[in-house]
Every structure is written in structure tokens, then in C-alpha cells.
Length: 126
Picture (tube, rainbow, N blue to C red):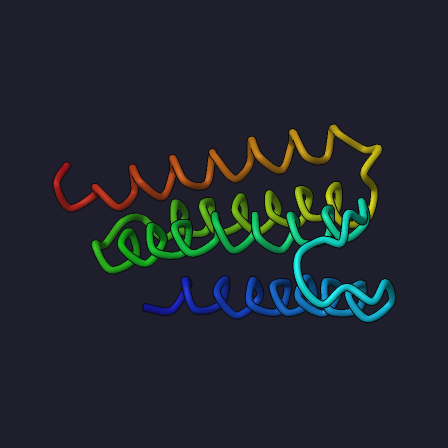
């Protein structure tokens, strides 16, 4: 397996960036637990949590596809869509909350990545 670890490493870096942004806001606003009824804190924690909710499944599907012998272009397609989708979604929630189109595009790409990953994961059965 050579493709999935690359995407996993890049997405881990993005996860760390989102984590540091949450920590930074906690320190800045003096919020130790929860969101402190702070809109900026809610956006940052949702960007972080949403990333954590979708990326593991996407990476698992990619690994299944890669290990199952799916065409590598499908594995890359799932990886690029997942990465770009999560970056756009996080950018909307965490940086530019008024750019709702980024969130929509991010979710569409994420769903496409999950769909491609699921189909590619079934490759050995086809």
C-alpha cells in the first residue's frame, strides 16, 4: 500500500492545523470546555469535529480499495476529492463563514470521495 499513507499524512497535517486553531481560540477567549457561547469557537470546533467525522471513513475506504487492487487512479481520485472537500469545508467553517459555497462544494467532494471509495473498495467483487 503506497497511496493511502500519503493522503493520510497530508490530512493529519490538516487535522493538526485545525486542532491548533481550536486551542488558540480557547486560549484567546478563555474557554476551557465547550464553546463558551462563542460563535468563533463553535465554527472552529465544528470544522475540527467534522473533519474527524469524515476523514477516517474516507481513508479506510481508500485503503480497502488500494489493498483490493482497484485501479490506482480511483484511489487517487477518492484521495484528492476527500482532501479538497475537507479543505474547502474547513475553510468555510473556520476561516470564511460567509462563503457558504465553499461548504457546499466541500461536502459534495467529500460525498463523492466516499462514493468512489466505496465503489473502488468493492473492486475485488466485481
